[in-house]
Length: 183
Image (cartoon, rainbow, N blue to C red; front, side):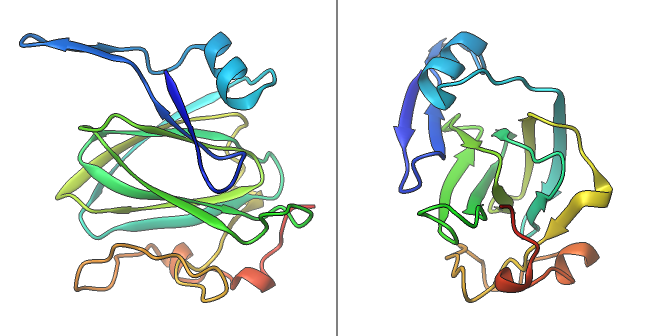
């Protein structure tokens, strides 16, 4: 696997080695020893896998949990999304900064979003299937959402002509500086 640094040192783009021919392809999507050695530099355990399907124009996020904080290893198995991680660790040198990357079934890239980050994605293809591994369990009582278009963060979403389609929870998200951040 090839690990690519981003402008936020803890967030990594992972390009798995893909072996293919006219019959199809094979790739290793996760291997604990390599992941810990090349990506996190520490023991990392995943406890939950999630799979979502969304249509073009849907924006999910920016989500985070104040308890049971989750690291996420994300990838797209059908279609394409613009995936975003925002550093919400108050004592971090990159607090409030974001990283965005296109993930698609075609490019097979993955993004490591460590604990202490808000996460979201915008579907750029007709539909997309998004899968991710989590380092802790989903805790709906501790889940929060930051507004996708918060001016203090300034994410440059690759929006089509229409406004993104949001869930009610995401429409009611907090502004970045009013959100309950992580110490």
